[in-house]
Image (cartoon, rainbow, N blue to C red; front, side, top):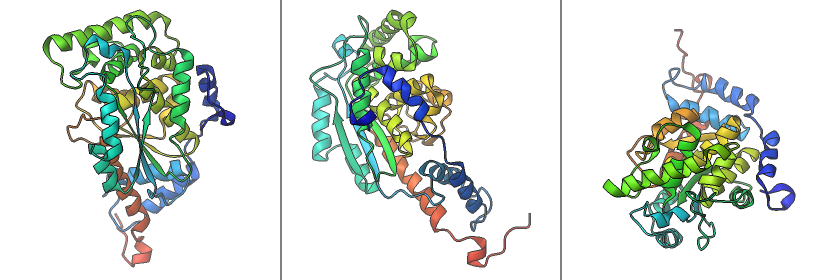
Length: 343
């Protein structure tokens, strides 16, 4: 999805989209609430599943929500700061993992198959990594906007639920820098082991995050500017997909620590821009729990995962689909001839 079918060329064009972002369909949400109140169960007995179904109804704009055409979109990008030794793996692993996705060998491939969904892998100019953000902005305004515009193409007609994920060596460093810039504190608060760095390597990673944020702190305009200066092309692509999904009324399930960095940049710019998003799971990477609290999102799953690649979001989509199936398929008290509680 692009403006007038042309690629978006600047962040000012992205910012102009804010006035076009729709809110939840209150009529559909209220109809789902009313139906939920008369289904054959005690009030609240299905817990969060009830809330998920009502959320889906409101954002899909229909009282009987469905998950018939789920899509997982994984964005892959390379980072200039990878050359600073912040990851346990070399940058070429990004392209190698993309190949693994394409031949069906990754964890996310198995989870997508279980969901009976489809997987789209978006390569974000892997031969052109972002700049080293300790020296200059990772992306120019135009480069960030173009990556977001590319991400918007992940949202196609017919999709009724979008799960977002990423792949990119050094992108936990980028995510940590984004959170540090947005939320303050110390670099240590936001920087975790990522691919497994420890000891001196982790200290180096923390220093990279600290230096990058210090360089750009005084020049930051808003969350989109943070995204351009400290983010990656894959994180910008995720941000674009989130925006396009909202404009198309497609609910989104976010993956973990890195994916939520894209949402955090959008939230800092326009809080309503992630109202249609669900948090798929609580990652054990970094300070993800703190991030979700700041974004106002309750994770669907807590399984100790930190793989990325959309795995947590895709697994959580099973719960979302079950919630919708329950809402549509259960009988009402009247239909089933069951007496309602008088309490």
